[in-house]
Length: 205
Length: 260
Picture 1 (cartoon, rainbow over the protein chains, first blue to last red):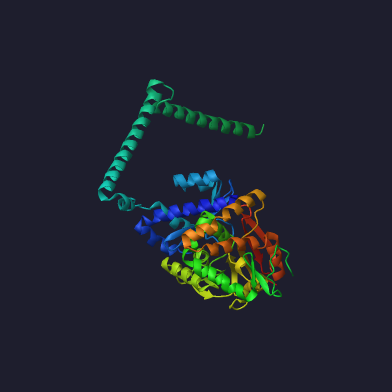
Picture 2: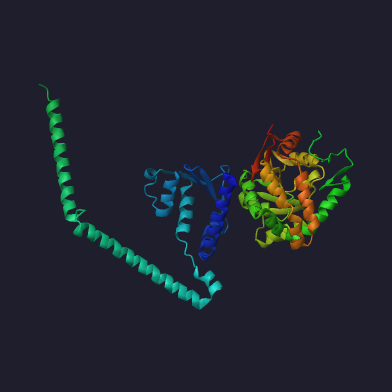
């Protein structure tokens, strides 16, 4: 399978997945409808992949190729785009190496719809398992999620305490504050010294 | 111009042409091909999935990516059959554009039309029974004409290409997706061996092995990549090129109609 066909296969799979997810949120389709016909082009520079996201009524169409007339284009390196996708942080796009051209309002609207997807996965599951098993699975999933979240918070606290209190590998916040204060004082004194030297060297003899 | 590609003799001057490996009178080929597609129309997509192991859907998507269509454009999905291409073209051209699904075979158009309507896709797709050799549209009508897995069934390919050229708008393009000649001999052998199974699969699934025997034979009788490219150039298309797909089992030919 050639690289182009492989990319088509990946996009086809991704399109199927995204549309399946969209169908699980009844409100998403009506939000997408006003954007029908708009195209977002995602241009990854490294590796070189171009993906066009076309809004088609209540679904998305993903296509490769550079010859679509996109309303908005997001371009950057693969890592930067992946970071943007995972974190959703759009505050420092330039620093992250991501550039956006075109209609940013469309991009923002599409991002908002995808972020606000409220997937009702219980409905399709209940069609396979039935109502009562689905509720049991849902409760188990919620319990597991709570346990994982609590466990992760506890683990983070324990590691923090071990590094600071037991092993003394990291300074605590009081020491850090004193250290930062000392740096600030030193910087101010250095600035004053520099100003004084400048004044001395500029005075006529 | 005569093309020296195996026993193909389907120029207008000859009184016979090939139908698979058989030589038949020129005037009979269209009806024979028609019988094949009448017979398989209902299970055409299922058989395509079996024969191509599902890859035909990816190849079609890849072809559409090469169409350079934009909102508002018009496109002719020639030999459009069960409407796979029309369904892909429709969102690309949008509500201001237009897709015409055309096929010489009424059964195929019916299946395609029903399928498209069942998918809720209406508004920018219309349907036509049309012979590729004499397309019933105004000249310079389409920004893109696409014929997929259809050209090899056409009796007079030169006439069909000339007709497509006439109907393509200056600056527009022709896309031909068709089975072709594998570039690697080993792959060619493996593919030949696999395709021997198609008539048997066709017999099992559609109850009509003969139609799939014809498909296998017609693929082998079809011009190879360079021959078809030359035929496109002779028809008037410029900047012709082709892309092999899956090692040349299929090829996508692209030709443009010059603007001046």
